[in-house]
Image (tube, rainbow, N blue to C red; front, side, top):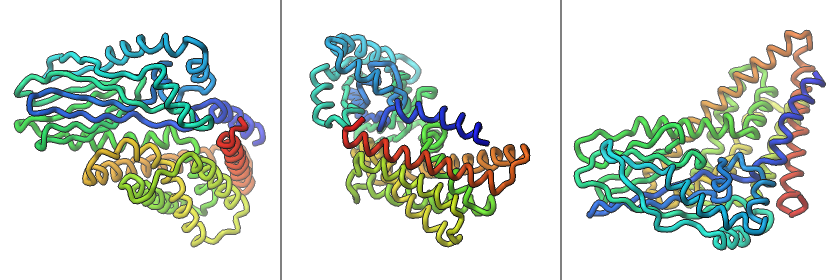
Length: 378
């Protein structure tokens, strides 16, 4: 059992130490005016894009080399512009439409923005690139693709006061936007994309979320009890996520990340001790869910600030359902993992306590690391 834990911890630590400390997905606002001029503004993490990597995968050491090696950032701007333009594709009723770059971040602007954010929060550097295109009159459907290095892009497309479509456009599936009266709105595709994004925030991206759900599972006496705690946890983070996205609560900032790690450590410790009542273990995921919701909110508030409340509600519902489905998957995977361990002859109480202790150690360790990062010690 000790060997299993050490292997698991050794696989996890490189991700904790070198991955992007806080990443945000790209967002996009597109407006088609009465003359069919299409103006597109894309907000994205510029340094990670210039490296050709998703924000969540860009190592800090590579970002530092790009940003602080003399001449490296400046020489990356023009290739980055061309790479963005090549990956940004638009089709109007199946026919390609050319884009024109109106604005793209310069090296000076990127460094200045990173400097304003401070040493501890120098990444990500979220900035805007602007593009224009002429959409043929009478177009019914637009097909929009983004560069793969952007990952999922939350897109809000408007045409006058008549049409507005909100969609999470992934790198594997272009966005289809209906802008004419003769077509049917693609709400089902939008819902599926939002569910997929919520699911992806847990599996495979939300390793800390998965650890907390593992702690909730290990502390439960049955699979049904664990699923109930998952639902309560979802309700908790839905409240704070919605409050920030709707502007009722301010953006929590970087300080929320150590608190999320703290909830993981406490969740593992409580499951390890096994002294909490079932009622207490329903209150705990609800309260901790409020904290995790603030963690989600930093990215959500940025990309939804220009959207109407009706769209925000639909996005949050789809996103949170996707999160809950992923949490259920984590619990089922955890149950299968525990069953596999028990087949080796290890007793269930000992297996549960060992795993709980591992979760607690990782949680408290990550909390210390994140606090040190905010303080500028690492």
